[in-house]
Amino acid sequence: MRRFTRTLGLLTVCSAAALALTGPSSAQETFKVGIVTFLSGPAAESFGVPAGKAAEFVIGELNKGAGPAPYNKVGFGGMKIEPVVIDENGGATKQVQELRNLYQRDNVDAVIGYIGSGDCLAVAPIAEELKKPLFLFDCGTPRIFEEAKYNYVFRTAAHATQDNVGLIRYMKLKNIKMDTFSAINQDYAWGQDSRADFVAAAAQLYPNAKLNADLLPKFGAGQYGTEISALVSAGSDVVYSSLWGGDLQAFILQSVPRGLAKRSQLVLSAADHVLPPLGDKMPDGVIIGARGSYGLMSPKTPLNEWFFSGYEKAHGTYPVQAAYRVTQSILGVKSAVEKAMAKNGGKKPSADELVAAMTGSEWESPGGLIQMKNGDGHQAIQPISFSRTKYNAEKKRVDLVDIVNFEAECVNPPPGVKAIDWIKGGMKNDKCK
Image (cartoon, rainbow, N blue to C red):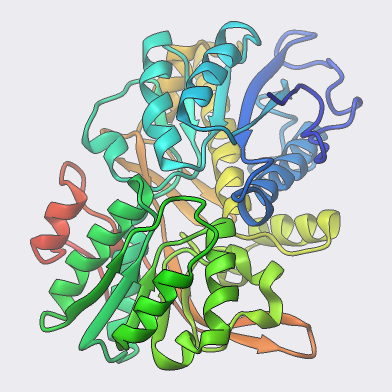
């Protein structure tokens, strides 16, 4: 177990000075928040660690009162933010106990966390049982609020439906040929749900497309020789994947020498985070998403400039999707805390006051406007962008070209409608131009 109140182990979240107990709403009060992200294992390097680094930067800036308006008040409503950081590695059973420990032993006021869809499905009922605020910052399965109703649980980012509906819309817009396609996705909630959404969306915009190889390796498989052989043999027009983290890096590194990217158009729903570590090993022309308008596809706004340049200066590389998603969660919680305090006379909000302030709220993030429109005001929708890869030898990085942005309503189901039903019904009520 890794449990830190001042550091992320290898990643320092806040200096001792940043954690000093200084004057918030009542003289020495702080807001204690659990931060849960992968610090070890195959999901750490390109996903969990960037999220931890973003938490380090953003919490440090907020505790100094150095955020841009409207985020320029110290900490959360004048209260310094005190993080307790947990490694998400270890599986859902471990995370259930870790969440209980955060609330009952560490006495955190709220938890921001969870990348793995299986982890989110496991921990959400625990927060509800304990009546403690939980803000899921990343996991993608639509099932969270489609299979249960929660009062104390929120997801501050859109779910996987937007990744796959947006990907199919991008492909159609760019006239990508897809008479045949193959798929490789991890055999757990994220991979299964992503695959279902992509196949259903393809049936709407590519009704004659035939699915060839349909592969579901286990999470963390690492070796994909058999699967790559099947994909090369299938020779499909398109190979779709929602692989992420170390699994996606391994798949790219193993498939490129075997010519898969030359034989088929690769379309990857959530791949921007592997571009910095892969560099020139990533083939040109791969169609990718980033689970939002993030990183090299992010909007040119003062808020994003603050985050993008500040993160890059602090950590020597630009921020990618997990960094953006934990940041928008932190800023959303800040907005809700301060909204609740404005209503209760400036006191530290109770759990119920914080829940009421977050429900149905909206706020600006570095990646665009976040709106808690779905899941009875507990599930976010947001804009999303897609592009193609092109290696820039001069900058020694993968650039993104042919960028297209889709508004939130274009790629997310309307309130009260299950994602798969909306897709199979023709993705009606969207606002695509």
